[in-house]
Amino acid sequence: MVRPSFIPGVVLGFILAAAVTAAVPDPAAGQTVKPIGRDAARGFRFENLRFDPPSVQQRTLDSGVSVFLMEDHSLALVTIYARFRGGYALLPRESYASAVAVPSLLRTGGTTHLPPDSVDFLLDYYALSTTFGGGGESTFSSVNSLAKHLEPAIDLWGELLKSPRFDLDEMEIWRARQLEAIRRRGDSAGLLAVTQFNRIMFGDHPIGWQMEESDLVPERIDPEAVARTYSSILCPENLILGAVGDVRWDQLEPILNEMVSDWPSCSGELLEPRIPELRTERQVFIIPKDLAQSHIVVAGPGGVSQSPDPDYFASRIGNSILGAGGFSSRLLTRVRTDEGFAYSASSFWTTPTRFEGIVGATTQTKSQSTVEVTQLLLDTMNDLAEEAPEEHEVERVVSQIVNSFVFNFQDPSQIVSRQMFFLARDLPEDWLERFVRGIQRVEPDDIQRVFREYVDPERMTILIVGNPADFDEPPDALGETVIWNVGSSGEPGGAGSFSEFLREGRRSPR
Image (tube, rainbow, N blue to C red; front, side):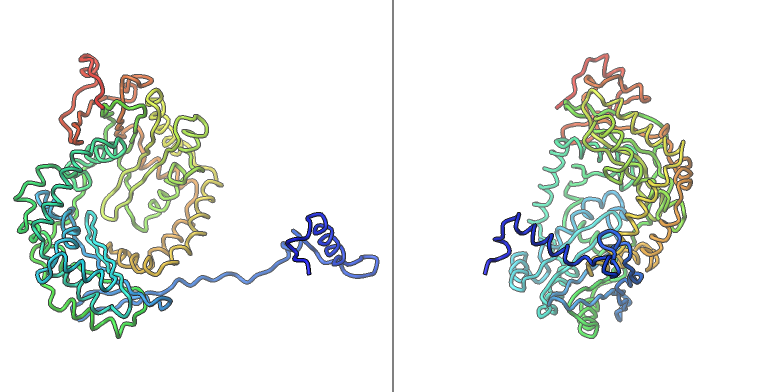
């Protein structure tokens, strides 16, 4: 018997053609001809798809700590998540370094009962995977374990969270790494552009903070300072828990109750979230670097926060049309496709829950097109205020969001983590569904309205990292220009006027 894969292509094509011909009814014989191909596809009828998002159980421990549980018995694994309200943004500046250090030292510093090497041994012995991290207003951790090792896994993880040792040797290793990172901060022009822009835009606000050598002096990063910061954040009053995997609530509840029962209460109060005083006037900051390409950031106050307000949903669609939507966005089309100035260009419109964010754009281009590209970014933003986007632009973004909605529920861990985030930020449990409904109501005129109301390119701050000697024209054409002197460590050393920079004939440092 000859295998079909060995039949010569011509013969195989003849056989297939004969089979198709044989299957087509003969109209002369009085038989009904059934539609084929595209006509047949158009005749298909299906019931409407119905998607019911997976549900998450919300439980409460005896101590009052909320727990989100999603059972998933496909694998004999369990992951437990902890999210704490509190981070460097809710503490004084003098606690900045200790707050940043806490997550790392929780993992590496051991516990009051176990030295670091014993912790490492037990993690390997039970095949546990842990994470420790933090952001501006939150600190988080997780442990992943085989279901059969769940109890010892939570015991060890709980001890790391509740009874950290803050080993002095590990603390010195962390401090040395931070000092080296400060020394090397100026090596990356892209990172330098972002960090210095935040410093200029947000000033003395946690978003604008960077680690400095003054933050790492012994009195700010010693065991006592770190323990004081730790006890203000990692305590049951600030805690939300989540669990995903091969476990039932009746199995999990006593283990979590045991972990939380002897956890000391918070020793200090956190600060309320601070409202930043954003820059609102046009000014151009140049960080001179001897580079072939300029790194450009332009932005101003965004006026919108995450909320059910229609302006929020319109800003999401508008940001995607402007530059966050990839190759179909206006910025990339104009800067890359039409003009060939840059490989990429994108926009951002941040929307914190408690205060307004910023809106702007960023790109890289050769030094000889720096000023022209910067003006192109500003003009493209202004176009959306002058004229509403096309209907098809809005429909494209709405379709992308709606059609991708189901992918928000493909991973149980993703679902539980999101519910924990919603609770921490005082958002409703069904925020994701409300988000989609809000997006579907956005019209082109809504986008023009939010750009007119909140996006003002004439008042945006501009930061350029590059070599002004090679610019296509003086940056003064964009507005009042300041040379923002930054040392090799990335720390600002004061500002000077662009005219002084030219008069002194200074060269851009490498």
